[in-house]
Length: 187
Image 1 (cartoon, helix red, strand yellow):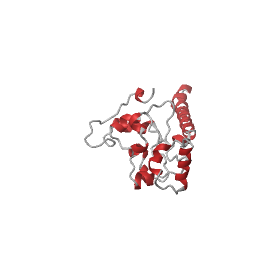
Image 2 (cartoon, helix red, strand yellow):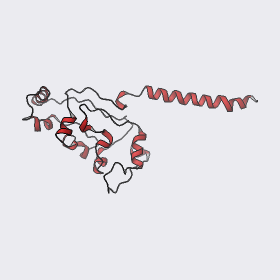
Image 3 (cartoon, helix red, strand yellow):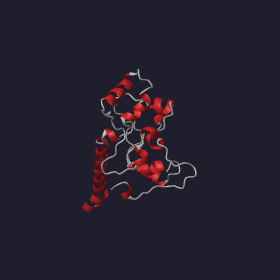
Image 4 (cartoon, rainbow, N blue to C red):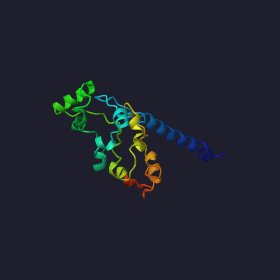
């Protein structure tokens, strides 16, 4: 066997596999928790989505009004909480903490559950406008005592839906897919 044959048949493929395996292992091992499925940071106030969105049927967009009007759904202002809690459950310790923040004119420093890398652009408006239910990406939030990330924050997950959105959009919707060009999400 010629020395070059050994290189092309053995060394090059094994070297390529070793380099790719190392890159994948390092990428997986160094992925920040904030991008991982199941991530659930401790919040400053114990807030039950199961109680509010589930038992009490408060629509997502009542609190997360930004989802219709801006890129980010955002978290509600303390004033939004006080729309109900000025008179409801005022004896509960967590509601009293919300009331104290309201009276002190202090925002509640909620911890983000969903965050994308800086190089990714996402806009809630077209998704909400297309009638895609919040649960398609965020999971069955109305059953969660404490919200955790249900969607794996990987490009392939988004592309799967953008290539065939029929399972995400309401029946009879005109939209069957989303943009798949790089500049739709990477700006």
